[in-house]
Image 1: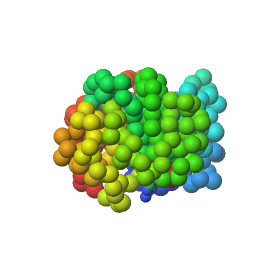
Image 2: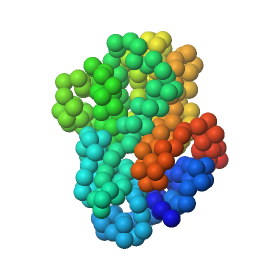
Image 3: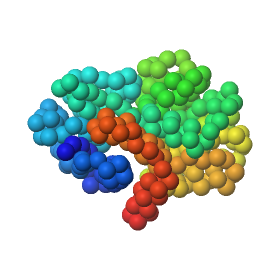
Length: 276
Ligand code: ATR
């Protein structure tokens, strides 16, 4: 039997066991996927003895993504781009690290908002943390020629831009409305709106009608930003799809089956979110 897990501190909130548990059952795989609360001082040791502990790999959530990146023997480009890993697996005795947030975000965007790249328009990103880096990497890979980054702490956006090169342009946080109206996609990668806390304070009235508005926050499912976008008639993409799709590569590495993201699975996770 194969075993995988998600490590975090705390880890109780993770919906990954529900996601992977659904796939294990659906594909009749003899395996388990559990939550492991691992304290920061214990992460390096836990990952070193991952195999000895009986695991074929794991997911990594806050605050261990940078530690997981450091602990790996090999790192895929997806992890190098973000200097953080959320998915680890053993390959010929080596611990390999990837960051599947880029894949998860971009796959979901293309499924939920096909043609988002129809116009030769910039993409606007709110935030400059780890999630923003993963998403900037995805848009660059998709061939977007101008990515605008708006962050409260401008220096963090500057650091991000230096890493990714001249396609990434830095703006002040106060410019987030005026500077993103002509975008093909507007993405919120900040934690604003999570669990209903805080407000983005962004009026979408003058936005290009083809702009796709997306939020990586998925609790609540419909954030204030997405609600406003819908009321303006803009296309929206919520954060649950990214959560579902980011799980696909890890499951395939650990259990040997590439799982499908279906409406039934989405409904299961949405039900769990809405049930609190
Ligand atoms: P992650 O790695 O998950 O992206 P993070 O590194 O903690 O998380 O980044 C959180 C993002 O939300 C940052 O861009 C942060 O802005 P700062 O770099 O200025 O901290 C942004 N953020 C969080 N709360 C915010 C708020 N009240 N107003 C504006 N931005 C906020």
